[in-house]
Image (cartoon, rainbow, N blue to C red; front, top):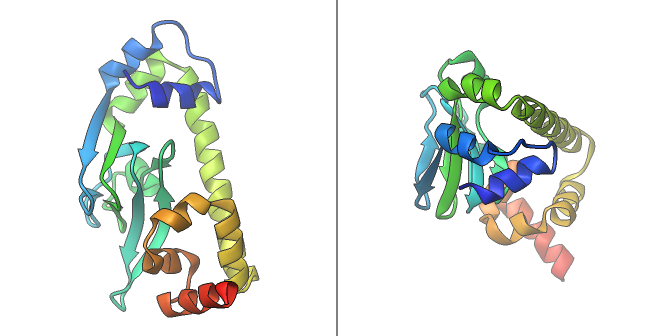
Length: 191
């Protein structure tokens, strides 16, 4: 029922026979049009979203009314607000589809029951969470320790699919600079 997700899970842990049927009882497929929200700031995050097709972003609006993007997700990536999901407090972030998107949702209120039936998923989500934390820490290091040009070049080489799919102003926000600065970097590279 969820071949992309089960293939992804099997990259990190084994699944017993019949796991797909169990997953089908606890997961839901959700389709979003471009610009639809999976989560709006101020709402409690109630799900973890595995992208099957499409692209999403997580962002907040600062006091100066600018968007600050902290995460992108494309096919076979997860996106959520872990703090809101676990604390059940309102989120400071919104999660929005950048493209028409199809995702699998694991709702928080089903998670523990699913983990009880498929304990292998606890290992899977631990690994996914560790990878997400490592990526977030690496991003912070790059923002504070490297120039804008170095950040862009690292991102371009590490995630070329995002550079092609994400609007330039969103990419600039994620990398911590203005769209104009990103245009100058790109012009210098191409000129």
